[in-house]
Length: 297
Image (cartoon, rainbow, N blue to C red; front, side, top):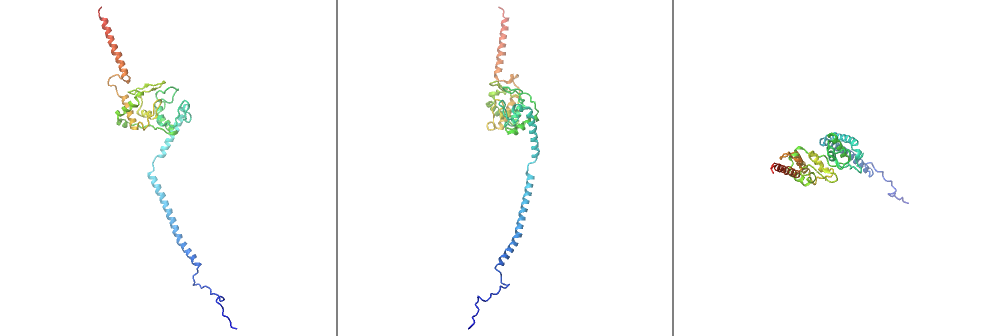
């Protein structure tokens, strides 16, 4: 009986030699080498990003230091101090009529939103504080100083804003067009304040006051805020240049001397004609009577 040779399946396979590359070890080694390559690159990128961020922050700080406006802190402190002082003055002299929060009552208007110009006009002309209710407040010497008026105006302005105090300079008045200001005054103001700004009576015990004592700033403030029965003239109706022209014309009327001698209150042709009739015709009658008395009958 012949022996059957061993089949290939029965022969043990040779163990893999060390020189044969491993299919499992190759990807692991590649991954490790890739990780070693990516590690320094990622760190370098993080360091570069951090450096760029620091440089950007430094550049922002330098630019802010160079371009930021100066003195804001001092101005804010001054403004806050003026508001605090103005609140104290308001509580003492105005709150009894206009309310603790300046909200007004059924008999007095609210001051929220009237602006600093309204306060400066009313207080600088002595119309406020009002001693007693009346049809209209008369002009009188102010009881507050200029600094206190500014503080009151700052406090009321802080409640809701509104028209600011206009800055009418002497240069602006000298450069104003008087003829144009006169046209605007005669078209918008002369009906109440009279042709030469001496005032006139209105209805229900009210009156348009004389403007002879008004400053140019007060004239512009009155136009912007509309005190008493006066309408409000906004920027779209009368711009800043035209408002200054009106103020300059009013001051020209009230400050200029009368070339004819007695101004007779600057009330225009009516008192002048009345005086001419009384003096002229009355004088002629006296002369006629004197001549008649001397005639012999």
